[in-house]
Image 1: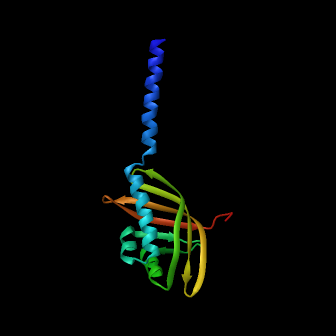
Image 2: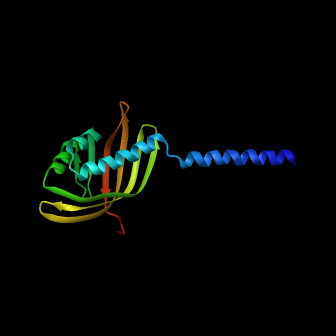
Image 3: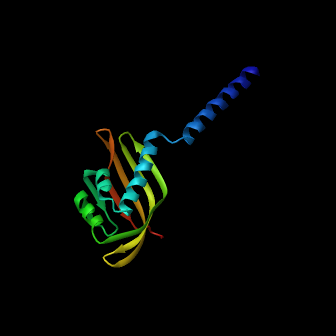
Length: 148
């Protein structure tokens, strides 16, 4: 009986350590979460140099209409007649795979483009890759949710 009680106590203690570790975010996950926030904020504030620094040279973005842009095209778009009033992420999930991070989230953006107001509610997937020890965004995909 004593051995069984001791075994149960050990299992409970091990379980407490496992729960504590899950509750604390891993360093790479925390880094990606911070980079996602930095990316959204730099885009919103039109901080072109910061946006460019986050993007890999072969970055590609796919927009809701299916159009795609590389790094230079996206930066040109961001530098154009665009005003972003709201850019916010919600329901962020980060999946880590060695040197790749996949971010899935809800995205809301409101502003004005070329004198016309817009208000988007999208789902997004961002793919980050650790390149030479530095996380860079290599791909983004935005789509309209089936049930907005």
